[in-house]
Image (cartoon, rainbow, N blue to C red; front, top):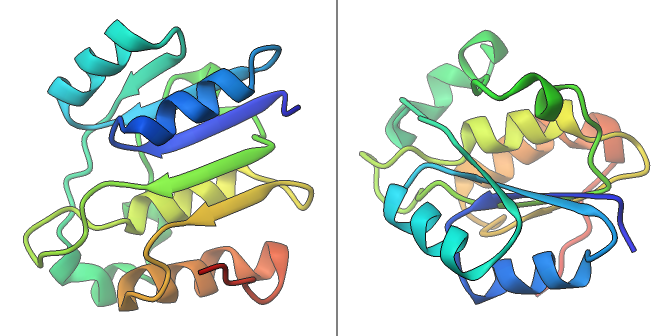
Amino acid sequence: MCRWILGVGSFTRHSKLWCNENKNGTTVFIEDIPKWAKLAREQMSCRIVMVKYETQRKDWESLIDHPEKLTLELPDDIKNKKFDVIVVDAPEGYLPEKAGRMKSIYMSSLLSTKGSVVFVDDFKRPVENAYAKKYLTPIYGPPKLFA
């Protein structure tokens, strides 16, 4: 059992799994799409925190060495926690105009600790791979890939 799970991603059937499996802990989802947040609130009792990404995937190379541009506005009680498990599955990062997962991965490095587990979905994509290596490898060492 985890005390703290952070899901950075759109509401899916997987969200219910994380919420249900952590009944005695606290599960928080960071969401940027209002319709997914509404659906999640209707179907789960986990906390949903709304954010705005304000980045575009096409700018990932110019942002990678500027962590000051990669922070998300989060409530203090979330910002000051270290999560046991973090799942990065958003925002959308499959088109150049979409937000990309740069901020999500960077924030995972701030919200985790050496004992945490961070899952980065779509790790094989260039942006996710580069940001995970830059910001998570110093904490966790080389990535462990699961297919």
